[in-house]
Image 1 (cartoon, helix red, strand yellow):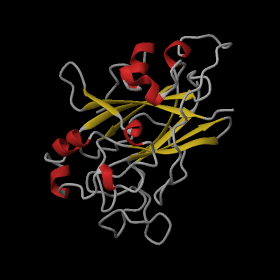
Image 2 (cartoon, one colour):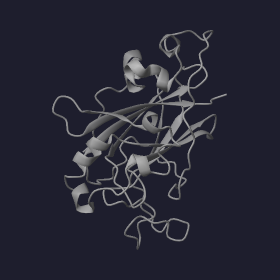
Image 3 (tube, rainbow, N blue to C red):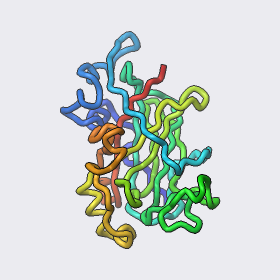
Image 4 (cartoon, rainbow, N blue to C red):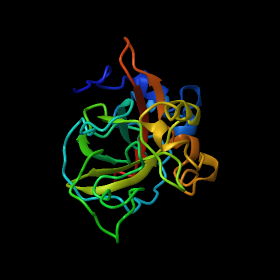
Amino acid sequence: MSIEPDHPTLSRGALIKAAGGAGLAVAFGARALDALGADAATTATCVLTPEVTEGPYWIDNKFTRRDIREEKPGPPVVLQLTIVNAKTCKPIRGADLEIWHCDASGKYSGFDAGSSGGGPGGGGPTSATRYLRGHQRSNAAGVATFVTIFPGWYPGRTPHIHMKAHIDNDRVVHTGQLFFNEAITAAVYKQPPHSSHGSYDTPHARDMIFAQAGGSRAVVALSKRPRGAKGYLGRIVIGVAAA
């Protein structure tokens, strides 16, 4: 069953909230509030979202789809990624945003044959599965929306989602990782199907990538979905070097 997002685009106010509300200068520059509604002549300096490794589990695919779950169990997450030009703070329309992450048992699609932890299996895909992977184009507000599940974990890493941003005929302008509030993660992992895999072994503070990715700036803003809907709505703003 598909899940449609309750808010298909982010308003100017929601964009600011996703970037941290009163702490806007942490995610962007001091002039970001004005720049988000400014014309093309306005310039502003926004903080560039740090680049990190894509990791060993990326697979080149062109699965353009909003719902990437493929019936994988877990609390649904409607994930809204807003991509902006880090120099001007303006949303980027038509960017190809790509995400991938492991399931509740810690397995990545494509690397799940004969491995209990989703390992790379000799450096390449070990199966034809492609769950929890997909692409979406950003709309006029710079927002790309995915329907996925709360990510699982595997030894040595804090729970995360991988992402890439492509513009201008598949030019990669950002490779990053997204993270989640640890209190919410702990609560989710007490419930099935995540509970069968136990508590994750690496908190943010000990993760080798979390600080590189921007620390708290790489944490998705999560809220319960309204009107009794299950799961979470997640939002984050990604600043890229588009020029």
